[in-house]
Amino acid sequence: MKTGCCMLLCCGLPVTAHAAPASTPIVLSQPNFEAGQNYAAFFKIEHGCEGSPTIGLRVQIPDGVTVLETPQKPGWTLNAERNKDRVIAVTWRGHLDAKAADQFGLFVKLPPNAGTLYFPATQRCEKNEIGWSDIPVAGQAWRDVAHPAPMLQLTAAVTPKSYMAGNIMIEQVWSPATPNGAAPAAAYLTIMN
Image (cartoon, rainbow, N blue to C red; front, side, top):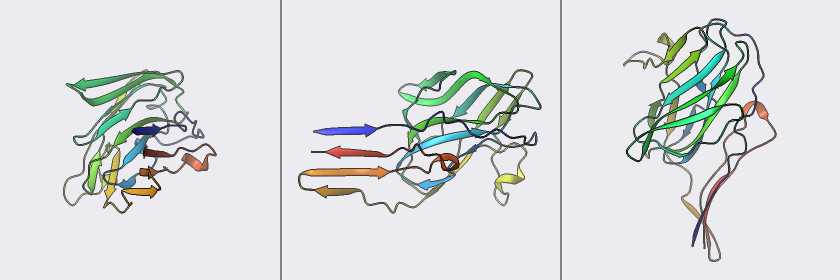
């Protein structure tokens, strides 16, 4: 018997609001992670668009990434766009004050090879929108482009694939870092008996 345990306890945690320049990109709260693992992707928005509140966020899912779960975010509606059985983009709609910060979470399975993934995003605000979709070319750094796409650096796999305790096998154990040292945390694993 195989039972999957996936609880996303830290979705929707507020991030401390503070003023930021108009050009602060959308970033992943944990920008480095092990290839081939399950990953809680939290996209952080620091503020609205040039003084305008954020009313939507659309994130494209790169090839090789599988969306496992789309947790609800209080006060926001969520729509998953599909191409056949694969989620290709996720859109949140709601309201976030212009000077407020927040994060939007997904639970995904990462591809098995080390490298760099980009998640092009569109931040929609009441008065305008910003496309965070620029991907650096060879010899260019992520911060060198005008509107960098959220980036995830995949590292080579080092986590043991499974642990045995009698007749019980535990696989894919991991826990992401909590945002800003928050007390609630999440742990993920698969148990097989």
